[in-house]
Image (cartoon, each protein chain N blue to C red):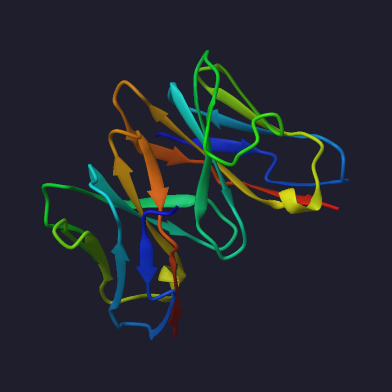
Length: 117
Length: 111
């Protein structure tokens, strides 16, 4: 149980295009989803927290207009990287939790490798 | 800024040896968690230790927590080649309701 999937696993796009990454909780309802970014050989940095049906809360320094997050249902959150540039190339990982249980238990997706040419 | 600083950054051992990784953090926490990440993959939750616990075991894993020193250690006993991965600590603070990850330790277990 508690499986989180991400799609796509890898994406290569041209500079200036937008890319959407999906995060799904497959066997549970996720009231809260988190989006992280990881550069090579570095740690995970939290980008934003999204609660179903409400606007995402972005961490300091993360541009909300560049990284659009939608959490329209209890099983799906999407991250759209708008007007992507090479510096946005990174590994994006989502996680999901059931907030009314606790957000300290997060189930992580397998990640999406974004390469912007 | 990141909560957790881990050391060593990299560790290379022979199969069968024990591996110890340390994590230090800066503020009060509700719990501390350890994760494993294989190269280019997602995170696997290993163990969670709460702020009122001092030691926890799970199979070949032993985690300690010293809240007075704001530090934790992860011990992997009788390591195997399959343990080769990056290991991250993450602290959970209830007020922020989020996990903050450490810098990670890259473990290589050689045959």
